Image (cartoon, rainbow over all chains, first blue to last red):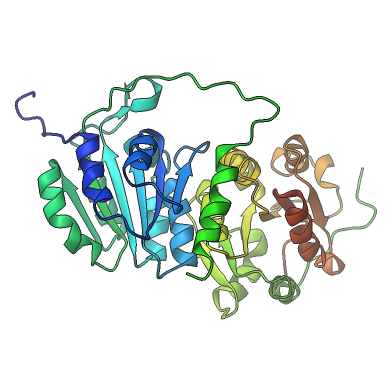
Length: 201
Length: 172
């Protein structure tokens, strides 16, 4: 580690902290975290943000406003949130009560070849959220501290943003398979199942 | 070329009543001065929730989230917002197969001229872009057109995709 540089937790250790608390929340995931999250704690209330980078935060907001008694977690990326920074204002003003916005701040566009995001470690998404008007925002550099703080944060009337300093996953660029005439976009298959799981909730 | 008849303003109260009658629960909007009188009614409404977004991208995903939660939103933007939000319109509403209805204000439109014959690009490209995206659209050019709102929802449900209502003259 470079002297003076922040320490960073692994993505998997961060996801483990969240997975241990998975119950009936709607979880909106995107980009690099989708697969490891699904392996750990996926269920019928997982919304996977595929095909519209940056949209996870307000997609989650919409669910939270429709179903205010159902907790919503958004597992966002730093590059994704950078594309829709205005969503911090939209979320803060809508003030969803049970809304946890997790930002994995690893400093790179993991899925496109690890090019740098215009947000190095000196830049703080937690401070942006705080300035935008989130009820609470906090930044964590290790999974143990995050684990110790999370239960209290989940009790806060939201919105709450948690910025997790994580290591790049190293998955590298993966070429997507070309669509065929029979291909149905993944999101079209995903969201109706989540809607059905929420009926009556 | 001009319209067969000049576009006339729809009273905001007429639009509002059509929204309630169509069962709209939420209006997700990036404020559009073209329909400001309607927004004033919506802000005071106890029947329809008005939710403001910072960008059109956000308005589209927010509306999608509301639909996941069983609500019936309307996305209310203006033509510039249509141009700004095309990728989310494609990725969310179209590829996601959401029966999402858009109300798009044609700010600055000359009421005597058909939108696609307009001199200003801001107005002229709205219908051609919707055509390119294969999104059905309806122009409301007077009070008699408000029923198209309910029609748009029926059409969106039938095609499992977006439908647009274009507001031709600013609401009164």
